Length: 132
Image (tube, rainbow, N blue to C red; front, top):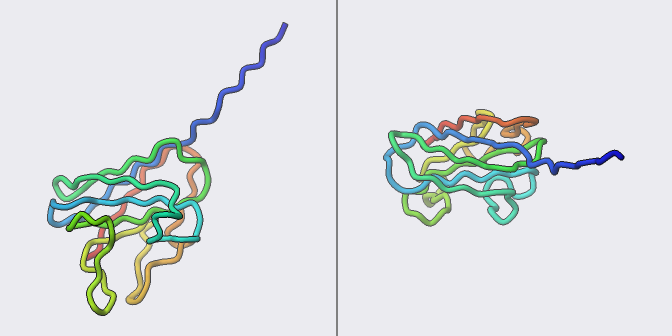
């Protein structure tokens, strides 16, 4: 008699280390997207959202059970705790922000999903340095 056992694939763990946080107040919001639709600001279209408190200029967001494949992470340093990126009258962010894969925002917009995207097929450690 043969017994077939099937184990569900739990996915991978994606750990995002956020550097360059100043000051060590407020919250750090890390949003994981699996597609371009909604990236980087539509939390309702994100696959997952994690919030961390900054310490010593950095914070860590950990996403568990992430399906293998392509993803992008957007990060904000939310100084006022509203979990939104505040902007001035001209649309320039007044709080820190950053993206996976070293993607940079242009003067007028966030980078496209493809620029921030990384492919993960095992546990991954990503690093995002904030811009202010």
